Image 1 (spheres, rainbow, N blue to C red):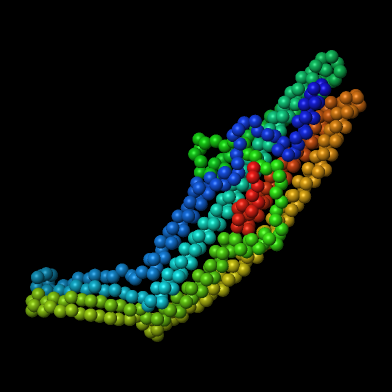
Image 2 (image 1 turned 180 degrees about the vertical axis):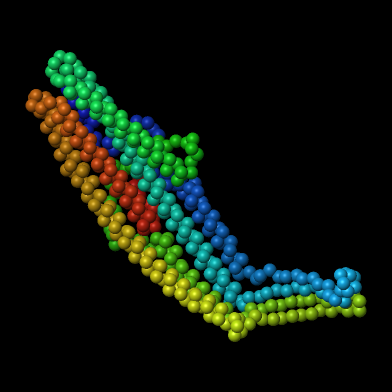
Length: 421
């Protein structure tokens, strides 16, 4: 019995900091997984390819329209090809006014820049989801090892209780209670195993690993890295958050569209060069044509005016969207900061007071049991209390780390709380 108590007390000496060290060498490093996701995640790759798509549109927007080559046979009697009066070959080119082409190119560049910030936003989103799944895996695995240690302890208790029951020192209730507790732990382990597989499946999908691959044991640093001050976080968000830059560019895009709409009042040009041949009379000659569009004709003027009004309304809409996004980002950062700050204070309370006091209670129960002033079940209840508090600590730590991951996404930087595993 005393050997069992020494084992139990030694086990609890490691609560809560890295309570369960993995004996195997297949531990995971979150920083390595982040780098792997940056290389292999399909969503990040798709966003990167979209950047290439948009960048390829820039030279197209600045280029002239394709020329047209037209061949005609005129004044044919019936469809007798050789008796046509004239044969014409015409090369025609439409030329948009030069400022329109440059403005169109600028507009396409802005849209390509949109794709760049969409790519950065996707990176932050994927890395935040990766970290959240990783911390959930850590939490589940810590609880699994904790429950396995409970199984080992309860099996020893059952053996002791059965021995003492055989000699009449305890009732059969002690044995039955321990057996029920052991069965309950078995059910919890089944549920935890399912949660572990689900967390690993999420990580595998984010990392784009094949289904046959495996993942090891998640670990986190013992050090609890605090968040940086709120004003610094909000400054970082305004400077770095890709969504804000995207929405700010939308305002520039709308202004460029307004400039382009106003230029629709400027005519476009049309040039053509035609070679004319008369097979019948032997005529050979050239025809040159030049023309302009008339966007200010009374029957089409309303269309150009409507384009300007549409572009002006788009500026107002884009400005409102940017202001709303800015307010939302600052609000989210503030909310997450308060959650993280509360989580840090809770973790400190667990480390400095709650868990040490639970250990003291266990010490008192152990001393009382050794002097016969309490029974073994009360001692197990004291142990169960510290185990439950350890689970709460793990849950709080997981939520704290997930909140920091959300904060990194909120400010647009996925490494501001870097800590070496």
